[in-house]
Length: 133
Image (tube, rainbow, N blue to C red):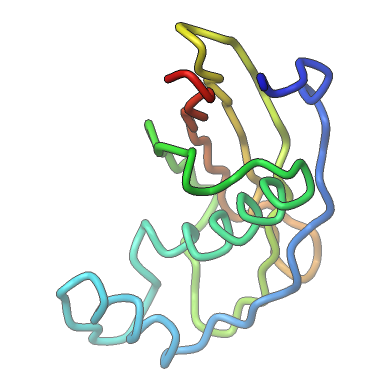
């Protein structure tokens, strides 16, 4: 069954706040095969929050994760993510179109600090494989 077009423009609740610690950044960097020497988090660190927001969206809409193929991911920054930041992500469904029995879902997530200031914006393209795809 296709994803409902009325989702476009819908904003989902923010994720629980996550404190960025040097240990969390170090674990993230190690998982990607690198070493963390301190300082700002890597540019891809906000995917941790964006992925939580995406999973909450999929669960809220009863979209099965095993039917999703991640098509693209972009990040744009207002400032670096630093240890000590307390962040949350708010996901918006930006676009939705159907092609060949699949849903192409565009999402944006704003990653904000504890003051509400946007630190980073992410956009993702998710391909939801239809039942006949």
